[in-house]
Image (cartoon, rainbow, N blue to C red; front, side, top):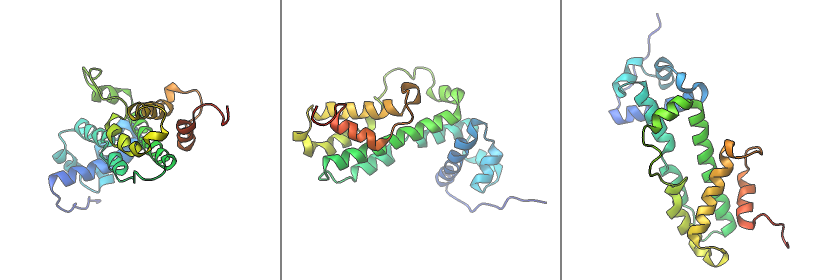
Length: 198
């Protein structure tokens, strides 16, 4: 007879975080069809523990979506970037981090499928929202401020263009070319569409 090893006692919030961490890779692999039994096995807990931490599977999926959408990790990374680095280095770092975030969110939401995406959006979701990647606008503006003299447009405009380009070139339904390369995109943001000397 096979028995599930009893998990060590954890505070409720820690248990919830542990389950969410276990479910995210499963969703990427199996989508919304992942079962609570599979989730429990991945988390090393009994299936009943999932339901003690979350009201139902929808609540768990919502918690996973909230974690994937949470901008605090990339905002924290950008806040730690040294503003005295060269403009070229900063742009490459910013583009790489934002590109990775958008790509990760797209992969996750695509794995969940349209029904879960629509359920999470909910009624009235298309009302007032922050612009794409708007949660990092302030920190990116502060990083670019020391290079104000090298930037041809106001800092706020430069950040808008940067966000729009990263977001737009990462969305598969907006592009006809293969997935964008962050280094190439950073170079384009710095130097534009014309060849040097043109």
